[in-house]
Length: 607
Ligand SMILES: Cc1cc2nc3c(=O)[nH]c(=O)nc-3n(C[C@H](O)[C@H](O)[C@H](O)COP(=O)(O)OP(=O)(O)OC[C@H]3O[C@@H](n4cnc5c(N)ncnc54)[C@H](O)[C@@H]3O)c2cc1C
Image (cartoon, rainbow, N blue to C red; front, side):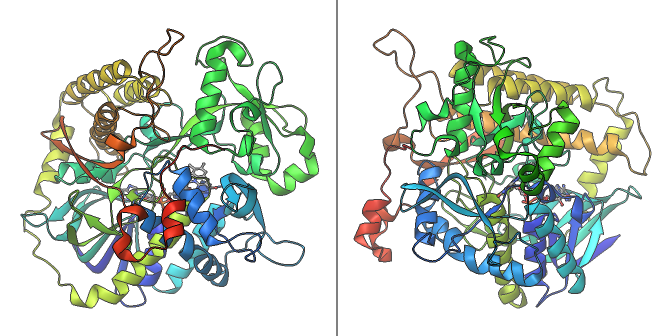
């Protein structure tokens, strides 16, 4: 079947739905999603969405901008980061008017809580910037946007999985996608003037993760195979507080409400590492500190190893049952259900969990996809949300800035599409556009291969966790790359047991594992090349220190203050290019004020 709409949005998280909402004011819009829309991972977001809403005395977008730059260890594009923080208040109010039921202060204003790395007056102290609806903030945003899209007659193709993109010969224009209908097993050619990828995160390639089953980074694999680059993929965020052994998230809102971490000595160890903001330091720092505590024998079980038996505690008892059930009901439930621990009675065991990908599909501030490090645009192709790299998060995202990224840039994509869609033509879609996908599915069904996706996925996730997670060295990354190349070989011998057409998850999960091998290779090669520590990318194989011990690599602005653009050639060869980071100091021609330029120059990050 051939499907055609002016605008096709791939993914129905908050980013995709906000883009759909605004573009549907001017165009015929359809959303394709491999899940039912309200099952998207946005619905799992707990703690809050950042915006400087308060009066000028208490908070302002300027301070939010500064925190975002510093939090990202100076790798974010400062002009894009400005858009994120200055668009924030009006976007939050728009969401409120669309019906998002935020929690309220006694005066009836939108309630806000502190979050890691968010400060008042350039680091003076923590500030209340995270707007929230209890610990179900993503859930209420997702449902509200879905209702608004239904009201606007956006067409939904649920349980349609996109497997390929249609580009013209020289990759300057996108004319559609190839989608698989899970219910019937049919492959459809979908043509459009505009395609928006909003496919979310990708952390299912790590063994311990907070991400849902659907976060397999399909778009990353699809675009890499089409010869397009991904940006800054070496930067993967580990959230400090996953339930130990499980990875299920305990929101940073728990620390925002006064929760704190302790080691085996009962010490509040973050006071040692970040004396000003302590347990509200950014995530990269806290995750690295937890690993250090455990490796130095101060994990609760004093194993001295990163293993399933060791962890540190988050303490919430002092908040009391009533407060916990009112402000953090979901995480109270998680601790009780999954660990049998009532957080008002006992501390909760936690360890870092793979949470978020800072890198992704390179875009400009209106979500238009770039096809190289020089910034050339692909006509008719946009990306928004976690799968996109605008880049506002640099080397480490601050908590609450992802939901904000989804709504600010999802909305901007929608507005930009609404304004321009009339000037865009439907491009040529080759008659045989779906042939390669159909062949690939037929081959898999006929394959006599003895490998299975489950075993390959497990080995992939374990090796990524062990060798390319919080702590990295040339040795660990090289071993990881070699293991991935072996997995690629094994994948060539994969077969499936279900040969049917109806809800064939065996087939789809096999294809997803293929995408995960693709972008994991890119993540590891980019990490191997980047010989410095910055944000979430910690390289331990630095020079020898005076104490005869190997130091971590320092941040190296002279050589590495640049964006990675990675391509994948012939399934296995990663090719790297580098692009400029937009710093105010390099763009005096844009009229930035001298004090701002001085303020935002890269410096050492201390909290
Ligand atoms: C447990 C948890 C808690 C979080 N809490 C917060 C928080 O408090 N604050 C914050 O700022 N951030 C938080 N985050 C991060 C934030 O929630 C995510 O970054 C964000 O929800 C991603 O939204 P998205 O719209 O980009 O994609 P998602 O909401 O992940 O949706 C992706 C969509 O793409 C579709 N899709 C994917 N692949 C395909 C394909 N091949 N074909 C068709 N459809 C496809 C899926 O069906 C889905 O609809 C949290 C994340 C997690 C995991």
